[in-house]
Length: 388
Image (cartoon, rainbow, N blue to C red):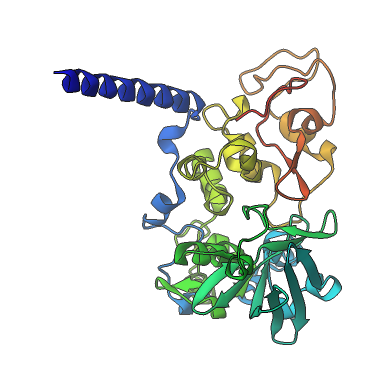
């Protein structure tokens, strides 16, 4: 009887805790939650979605084919960050200018560029482990990181180069401690899913017909990385039967607001991706979709506040705060104006320009040498605890 009462009490406590957790989670959910999905759920659907692995390699035609009709877009895009999300190690300007020699406890790390890639080694003074780096991931401002294959396993190199501060330091999510052994010092062992995820988001056509072939990856996020394989579209253009609204390629401009931010979130992480991976807290600064959908401005999803409403994905990121005022004023009023159905936002009582400098503050991310714009749009309170 005592056991029954204790067991029943435990069940009640678990139910209360579960209800409390659910209540908190529900309070944080975007109003569009019924239309939001995790990236794995999106990929299981029939339509094209970034990082989808089912198309065949011969369905991809490459940027040069796209540029034949979209020359201006292709010219702008090659200078964007997304076009430079990866680089063969042999071509990395960062490694060429900043070879690594780093001391961490008893371990010495070295990376030296070679015509075939880059040589990586870790030594404890007595023994040395070494491997070749084929790719660098990231353009360097936020960091450039590296993977190695060693004895049949893939490892994330524990040190990355951070261009903003011009330093080598711990890679994101690597423990900031001295490794316990030379094997531990080598790097963080990745699961096959993590390995593939790095390549699928930083390269194009790495996985085709669900077969992972990193050695055949196209560097960076190419046109087809977002719009899908273009062979059918190119063939239709040559025959004169291409339809601008066809299913041959996907135009993200036609997506609903909720789908649009999930589309970008396929690599930048959707709201559900962050929650299910429990990457909330300060780490979520790196995931603008999650932060954006926690904003009051997001509401029930408005095309004026999607990722592409503010950022042209075909061009380099605009860094001038004043440039984004027009986006804020597409919903918010100027002083003295009366709210309208299509302009329901109140006027700011403090300033009339550079809205994002106050309402989307840049935060120093202690885990990397960079400042991130917080896409959780809000009235920032002095000394407030990090809002999640």
